Length: 457
Image 1 (cartoon, rainbow, N blue to C red):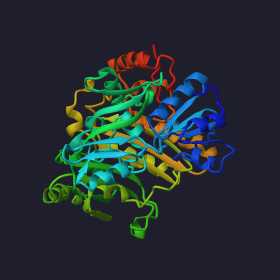
Image 2: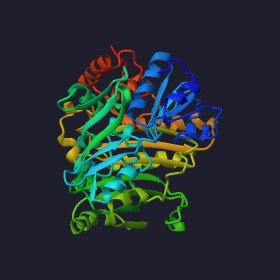
Image 3: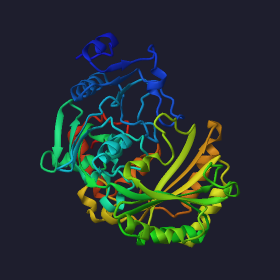
């Protein structure tokens, strides 16, 4: 394998595609979900198999080139693309082998959540991923995976049985609870710090017809508090996310709701349909709904609620902040509404995800995702068009987050480019020390550093 960035030689040695600035399609290939991220890598390599992943990792190590690993390209911090380095784009790695009888699947990490879920759904089976279908399963899984099945079946990593990983020395490793157990522990929540995951083995659950969709309610402090209380009291089959915002002119909303504060609740009840209807009844009676689009559906349809977004670009500019809180009541609801109505962004959102259930029954030390006991995850965001507005919206987000009196806790997959202290907040106490030890063993030179970085000792 060449140890220089010789493009002709590299193309001759790889079956996968090598894309440079001279090629048609370069700008499309370097683009990621967040349009504000505008970086120009020296090359984008789309390997054809795990062996080629290993060769690209070795090339980056031997040349000193910065290496970005891309599964779906949704990194809020822009880690999916390098400025002047190599992008290892896993988009061609989409093999999926489902054993419906054993309820397991081997999945390559170029798959998106929607692609995997559609294939598994053909068997009436599912693994829980996030709430956006276009996110790649690679980065999502390595960070934990919080989504529509979190209370019923836990995090994505709670269904991770094994993985195949290319480490910094180019070695291809199989890891599970018995083989390289320290590394298997670390990749369940520790992000992309330890290697390039090329395949995952997941557990599948029987999840066929669900009761799910969107329920839109007028937003008041009492409605916000009551939503959280009902979601916590609901059966574990029910997972719910509330997006609180000033309603834009969405076609499914009546005109009189436009410009008014609403709670857009995304609900998934993964259980018997009749029981699901009963579990949803308290949400429908919190107040008169503005719109009720909750219905029976096949589970894969949950990713199509906002239409087919597979080709759609993300926001031009976005600033966001995520944190955990342990209580939301009517006293919390008023500052939420005050801050949202004070924002000058075209769209400003506060998202509340109620946790607990199966996620909370895994001990904090069992995986690198240590925030098992946290009750609610909050995400605050402002979306806008012009970069020169960023200081105003960044100040708004920071002030809003401070109103929650947060501690340092944060979910690593919702972390932007926010500095070392916030990365430490994703891995409290002994979790950080243990991750540093694993990093020092498997990536002592910090080759995998374009991430929420855990430096080696």
